[in-house]
Figure 1 (cartoon, rainbow, N blue to C red):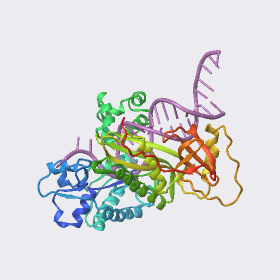
Figure 2 (tube, helix red, strand yellow):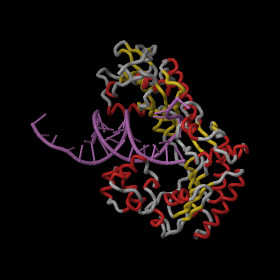
Figure 3 (spheres, protein in one colour):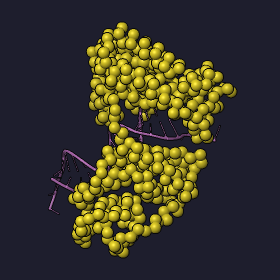
Figure 4 (cartoon, chains in turn orange, cyan, green):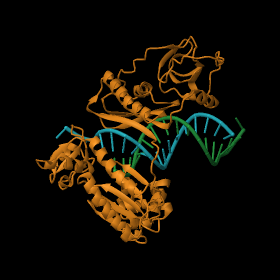
Length: 448
DNA sequence: TCTGGGGTCCTAGGACCC
DNA sequence: TCTGGGGTCCTAGGACCC
């Protein structure tokens, strides 16, 4: 918590819908719903006119169609248009201060203390009024709500208090007066589950929360969460404004218009998702060691399966191979509603034989075969034919697949996709006994 | 024609190490 | 031959955010 209200939060109002209304004047003043328009679509953004009828973000579009009147526009999103408008706004914010933290396409924090500004209440009020006016002109009529306070949480709460096109400055010293009457849901990190737990002990407002002891709170909602809420209820928040954060994961997922059962279709979808993820990784110059498959079944039950490789991957083919193996081990009977593929454990892509180092480490913790690891082959250029996920067969060990490969060595997991690391075998990359194999027929639907 | 898609962070258990 | 605890990595799931 700072001594002056120097953190600003800007939230663009009903952003996607506002851009549509700007670009299509016939939509102005009418209810507009942007989101998935197919049978399984949900609402991304409802204009304020549509909100009057109950339309909300995350609501199934089918429900929004039921409750909104004839004449409501239902539009698919145009992300490129939103991105262009967002860029205009973020550029304006960076003129206020070099410390701008975009939270999403329509939201950002600005550390005004890093700019040259009068940080009195009157000063920041004038600054925000001027920003809002210029922003509306620069974007062609998109408006934003601004909160300014002594911390991120107060700035964010301020921007929520007066929507749309609002401005709230929370002066230093008045934080608790603002905070305590608000419902606990106003605090970042309090969602439906936490609110319900708190309600069960008669805690409804931030003021109620303030009266809980740290021990009671952490017992109720967990260590980290409890400690965080304890501080937020006291306006104790010193989180800095961060300009760029490194991505920790990259993923793509798709809900199908109809549940899929056809193995060939499932494989094709995995390949397409892996292609999206891999190309994004390659474009950003990163790669990651953990591949995660997400599956949502016909009955909406959702599960994830992941596998950490000894070396990072960014190649769509390799990502797809691993994801297909993970899919092979899940129950697909009844059909799948959604598939997702992700890569995490990201690191900047580095040239060189990372795998050799990974094997050194793995050998320290892995029960390796009794038979000796083949001696290092003669120095010289080695052709690495193996890639993670590739199916192989070995006369001594049977069927397996490549877990990791380097210049000289290849590590294979034998006996199927869930073989524990203790059963890996490290072989010479040029071991003549090790042969590529046709993939097993994993696509046959499995039960249980 | 119920329930998207992109993320982050936390928890908890098991394996394994010291 | 009786009993530990801390730390890290991996996996799976859940809550939450926009």
